[in-house]
Length: 417
Image (cartoon, rainbow, N blue to C red):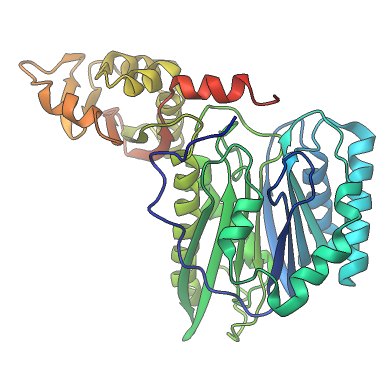
């Protein structure tokens, strides 16, 4: 089915500069889709470092297994990323692993690098064998395309579009930061729309910086950044088999490498990296399948930060809360329900709830004489804010999600057809 662009989509794709030495090409391989690019090959300069976080699903895809091993065997080095859309190569057994090995071997051959320096991802239908010959048979041409005058390296939007499945718009973000007086760039793309409750990262996301940074420093920054961004976003509470987030540092900006993650010279870079990750995560939530409203859930006063996050996720994941918001119904009783089921400490008589800045419930009951008019007006908008104070401690957290409409059923009920 043809999907309309989400009403929550950004006004346009951001300006993202080309990065020295980074070349890529998007290409139609016919893996599942017709008449569209469904393969992305990104070639990185020699000595590029890499960090990654992956799904904690106990049923990971073959590409996830490969990337984990490549990070270890390749000692934090990378030369290429190869991503296909339309087939997840998940729950495909030994045949799926063999498809990855053949694809990686061919990519390493055409690029001229070690196989463990090639990272692969697949996204799409689970349980179908990947027709990897459709990729390997065209890799020579795709590589030549990537290397010819930089390929599509100035068109990050094209790269982001090539990895989409049920996404309705390509997702990208870019920031600049300063390390020890040198300006560096951070570019990121992502895909994701459904099966989204990250337990490490996002569905698929690739972030590239021209900064010179060791792999262990990248890994530490990425893990901390993900916890505050992608792991605080949900669409439908379902964690993908394929979640992959890779961060690459090419070193071409010319800064002196910073070898200690606690070095104060990284302060601006850490902040801008988090900005990119948060921007991408929120774009994924805005593109939630069938979404019509973007929701921010803020929890304060919890027993701990961990407790606050669990409570916020319980609210954001609740089908009853999400459908009430879709129907523009200020049914705060459903929020109370979600707080109570989260499994964290809560006291009914200390709980307070605000919707759109208006306090609607406190001290175990509805606020006396509260006027629902401004709350109803807020619910009719596209940006919804729910605030819950637990009244027990100093723990706080924010989670982002979207509403649940019939469009979600339409998309997922016909996904394989």
